[in-house]
Amino acid sequence: MDMRKKIAAGNWKMNLDLEEAQKLASEVAAMVKDEYIGQAEVILAPPFPFLVPVHRLVSDVSNIHVAAQNLHEQEAGAYTGEVSASMIKSSGASHCILGHSERRQYFGEDNALLANKIDQALANGLTVIYCLGETLEERESGVTAEVVGRQLAEGCFHLDASAWNRLVIAYEPIWAIGTGLTATPEQAQEVHHYLRIKLATQYGDAVAQATPILYGGSVKPANAGVLFSQPDIDGGLVGGASLKARDFVEIIKAL
Ligand code: PGA
Picture 1 (cartoon, rainbow, N blue to C red):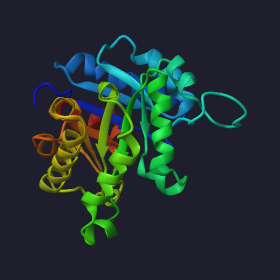
Picture 2 (picture 1 turned 45 degrees about the vertical axis):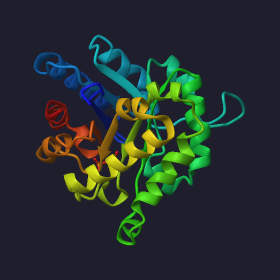
Picture 3 (picture 1 turned 180 degrees about the vertical axis):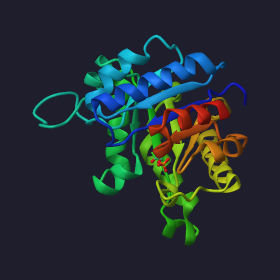
């Protein structure tokens, strides 16, 4: 179990202007350098226009990486307003979040489209943070496992085992995102464990044991420690609390 990377990823969503983004990145980088000692991986996911300046500000801190929040499934061409995987890679980013529930809900992204986006990301050398999670209605009607199992299988199970060294899974129950409601550590652990079993069934134990599974949904300094102490929770995908350098760094330290 110790073989798995510990990861704290900050999803800034559609927030901040350039100046604020640079300030936040500099503060996180300085705090990580000054205060944090360890192996944990830190990922910052700013909006597209800030990938380059944020990367420049954190590139001298070896455990901080930059992620995009989305990409287009085609390599290049007449897709006005879209951003490709190769553009993201050339900006200095190394990761891309895909399948966030806000993309699924507001932009109609489904598992089949996300499978193509994952292929595009991997083909361009990016590491994918693939998000999945159930709605409140799905949880209450007892179909959580079925829903997240399908999101995992339809999004990722076309991949070879060798692709899994560049995949991170993020379980984000939709009812816990931005709501202040957090899954209990036991609820989260149950789903994480289920996802790991699915990975083991499909790819074998080595892949299942090596793949980081992050929890997301109202992670904050006050609950990060108890969430991260669960055996199958390998870190967090943090929205709101990642916009405050001090809060985000406390969450990193909880790893
Ligand atoms: P939150 O968002 O931490 O603000 O709940 C998490 C996410 O959507 O990744």
